[in-house]
Image (cartoon, rainbow, N blue to C red):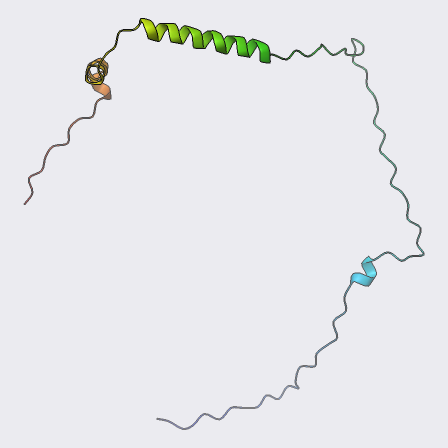
Length: 114
């Protein structure tokens, strides 16, 4: 080992803390200052060239949607009743045969395990 390390003393004086001054007193309004109310901004009213616009009456379409939904349900129910039952295997085979080759996966070449 070497010689022991002796700490050196600084020649500068110690740091003297300064008192912190909050700036909130400068931001807070004084009570004797009169508060002014902000004036509302006035907008210019512009009338279109064709005159004042008259709104069209609003129509709720909920009744029409309900009627259309019920009609669709009734037509789907009648179509389902007229279709002939088909087994799941036959359905899968029909879909598989109808799928073009370009959408089918190409089998990966089997690599022998060494």
